[in-house]
Amino acid sequence: MSKKITAAICAAVMALCAAVPAYAEAADASVKGDINGDTEVNVTDVTKLAAHVKSIRALQGAEIERADLNGDGDVNVTDLTMLAAHVKGIRSLDGKYIYDTKAEKVLAEMTLHQKICQMFLVTPESLTGYGQVTQADSVLDKGLENYPVSGIILFDYNLVSKDQTRGFISTGQQYNSKHSSVPLFFAVDEEGGTVARCAKKLGTTSFYNMYNYRYQGTQTAYNNAWTIANDIASLGFNLDFAPVADTWSNPNNTVIGWRAYSDNFSDAATLVASAVKGFNDGGVACTLKHWPGHGDTATDSHVGMACSYKTMEQLEKQEFLAFESGIEAGADMVMVGHITMTNIDNTPASISPVMVNDELRGKLGYDGVVVTDALGMGAVANYYDSATLAVKCVQAGDDLLLMPADLPLAVKGLEDAVANGTISEERIDKSVMRILSLKEKRGILK
Image (cartoon, rainbow, N blue to C red; front, top):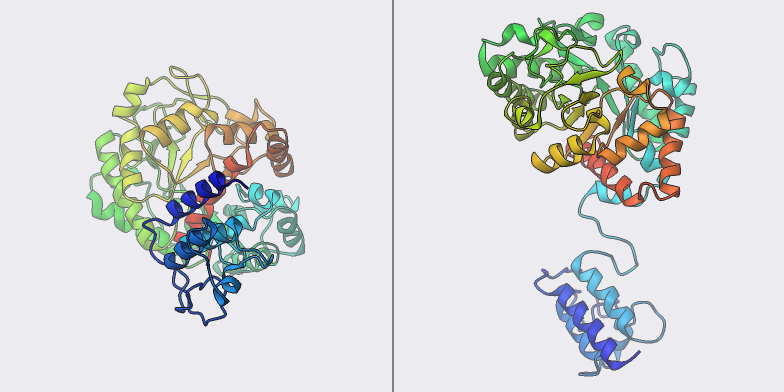
């Protein structure tokens, strides 16, 4: 290696360590990397090694032994690079990466299949092939082995009693732990009022639709959300697909209607922010839904195409307000609806790079988990197979894909997309990192 190249590498390594706090590590005189024998491996040792490699000042005696980090009998730029990475906290001297968070460490150890599966949240039926699942059994165990998904959502037909629900969730987590180091989200749609699986089947606290409380202020919005969260957390759920951040601005809208917190954009923003705080304090992750606003559509996206005719300017001044306030209040997820924006790109928002990457992430600055609405809904499932739809969702900027019609096909679609270069593994990593970071934040990933 020429002296010019060696000098350039040394300069780069020294720049890497510049202004980096010393990475102290107790040692004795024989510890590798502790070149000057002061029981610490830090920038001073990097400086001495760099001077040796640049032929400015040679190491002597035991210093040489301690500086030969890779044990090849030579002290050179390779050893300097290893030591600099160690001091900066990137990689330990034995070659193992040093991570700032549990999420980073887990991600680094996952296979591509595990990472892609972590991007799906599904029903227990999609893992077992059963028509209805009310208990975690060996078939669910096998399903989790084959597809170590991010989470499971339960509906009213999965719930029999409080004890049965707690047992289901507990056993499901135990099965998952055999196959994955990442605990599951257990999710439910518990908004209060019309959409309240646990209240209706298990007798948790019952509420009217949130629209009924629109004049009772922020404290009521907070209290209602806190109670819902506390109730479902006691059953083992750690994720709620609530609150509704849609504003009921179209009287003909039936899919949202009284589920909304208000028919006034400003009031909805204030109440939704309080609800987010209530859900967070109550002990579950919460989700703003349905971006970019389902309250103005006249049709139901569960059945077929649902359109919004708002312009971007109208959305920014109206529908976006409750999402902005909810994000600022600390919402854990934003759910993207299958709402076709006819005056923007004529594409369902869930597969629209404009609505997810440009608006939600770009303009609103949201870098948390983006979850799709259920991918088996007619608004998208009527037009795309599960593989194609999964790829389009990821290309749009979604992280967590909810309830694909065909889980194996959706997983294979993403694996094939990575293999053929349509989607990079780095793009997959970004989504999985967001998911793992949320699980770590919520105490799910420990």
